[in-house]
Image 1 (cartoon, one colour):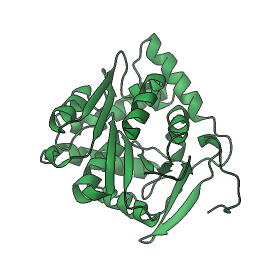
Image 2 (image 1 turned 30 degrees about the vertical axis):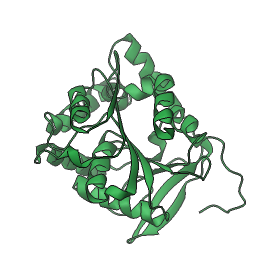
Image 3 (image 1 turned 180 degrees about the vertical axis):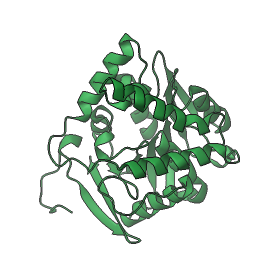
Length: 285
């Protein structure tokens, strides 16, 4: 970890990468914002590392909250091998949170991270105070097991035009979506130094296997999620179909749903100016 007398970073692009070891795994993480109140722990998407969080989401959230991003086992600079089940990923997330000495957190989870967050609450319900689920779906949800096929198809499409796969996976391929995609990818490059290690192909494939098994498993009993929950997505999510966000909303009692028009899996990034105030108000309520 960096020395305690180092000045606090003013933006996510400047936040140092820290490390904590628990259960034989050394977890890489970054933190930003005031260290009072309930921390907000961010659970990242498929094949994501510390550099894959949009600073336009992190920075304004960190003005009001202690924000923590981390790599789960086997991803980026975190050691070990990626588990082949969502439930095991959730146990690793619980281990990481405990290693930081935290006993209650808010969770901001996107895509695969949202699946891990649901599994975490299933095993450790008292650990989570509030939950934000973006671009994700429930265990056993209709079409969840098709995520791998869509992912591989869009990676091929992106490769053919030498684009970042997230431009195809996260955004619509119309003029508005393409513009939003380019802006998002540019924001992810704002950090110039101390960037994270790329996610390995083997890790990516193991994550896809876990998502497929999650999709084919018995449907989850979402009535067990009693935490205040905010659900968000674009209205045209091809990767994790938008109807699954609506399904989550129907089945999580008291949850709130925000759907953004003419946007896909990365709707919260395309509409970050509208989404962030909603998320912050939800966390502060």
